Length: 520
Image 1: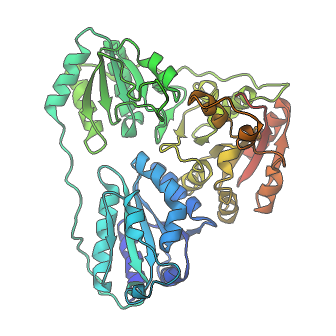
Image 2: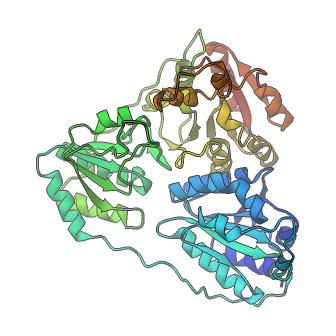
Image 3: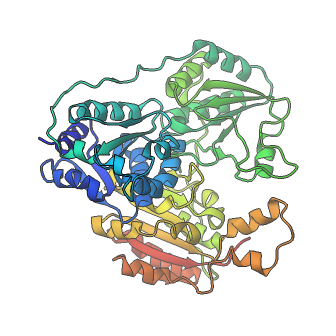
């Protein structure tokens, strides 16, 4: 058995049975081994950023790692943006990067690069280069353990070509082993309970694993019983929401809006979330969003047992699930007339299927989506965790592979879609049930807003030209059709409702392009 076969068997034995890949020459033995180990599902991506984003989406929904297979340093570089988003989401990913044969590296061939340095940006907790075939299985098992955490992370294994093709000895023991189960910090629990009982204004700032059941109900019970304000991260990795669930207000992207949400708090209790900061620096504005005079307390962080700490807090406060306020069922009326960003979001809220998974990269055109879908049937909402655009379509791919029995909607803006449009080909190739709502406003609208917010000089036509996606106008219907995905274009709300309804009722991938005016 060669190293590649041993590696794949080791991954499958630890529950890693999907690999999103864009391989090259150095990875051919791994590709060939897929026929010897049919338990591993290989999913081809036409661009590395699709493979890495799909692994992120898969991990968020399956709650276990997928693998990636990338070609040398340049291939890793092409996938870094969505590995960055996965790192911020604490998604478990086993990131396999092929490299030149160990004896070939001294020749500084054209594709030689410092893979370790590139990987360290997105895999700060685990980067390992396997030097001998007999070490490969143990290294792979260590990578899986590191990826699972806690916290979940991107674990990068660098695989030299000769290690892959050489005979390998099969071992069953990992050097690293599973991470010890984190303990609940009772002192933190008692401090949080004291603060919540103080009568002073308290905010619960939450994210990560606790914006899913049963933690979500516990948070709602604590908030209702104590009067605490319940807020979550701006871009949670996976938020369970909809009718019958506890509603959570997301912190605003704009620092000015976030400041209003946090204003007046004397205490901020963090539960599986970092203390809120502004996404960017702005002249004359604070980077730290915690109000002056507000004390920050950490109940549990990403590496802690956040669900366990929350359960301990609920027990100490003596609150129960019946205390939680639930989101009532409500849908917008199906819109008619002019097609705008607001009517697109209303159509989504009116037609969203029960159990849907929404990969949200709607950006400025999606501002109304949260309100329009709040009372829709229960669903999952996946967000742009690291802020690196080009995530929405690949994450939808991974979510659909992880949950083939659930409808997936990619709620996607035009500028972001262009980073990883190749995702549509993978959806078609794999027959994935993903409906893309493509919001086409012909611009990088968010950058038009940011141009003013950063205090730049008054901009003229040359500057504004850098933020527009036309002329020429992009034909997303033709682009989707060219990659094997049926597509249609809506220019009125009535057309969108009809086309979206048919797309959601049709198995397999579909694109509905919604032509809307910019709201910026």
